Image (cartoon, rainbow, N blue to C red; front, side):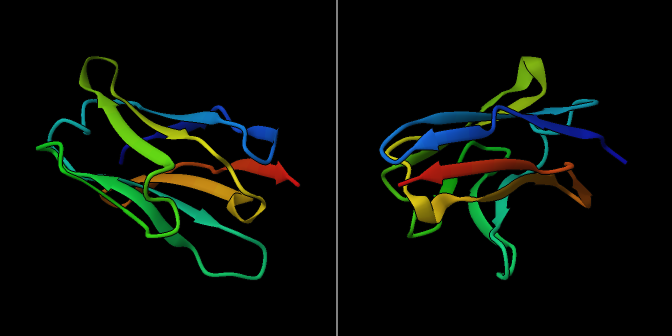
Length: 111
């Protein structure tokens, strides 16, 4: 089991930016794909962005052009840079690798 710890969430005005970080307890990101998910109140958890071990990325249509997923293998950390945030981006964000999930971190975007 891998322990994942997210950080970087908070409250931001619409149009602002946040960077989420997900630190793993051991080396996993360089050999496994990982993803950022989010869950808004009353909604299902959805995939926001993913990155493969080879560095290929994919994004939900709703965040394309605004969010960027990246990885620092030396730090066992994956990032989610979120720009041009919208109120509909408000959710709890989770990182995931294999069967492990972080505890989730709140992102709130005010209008």
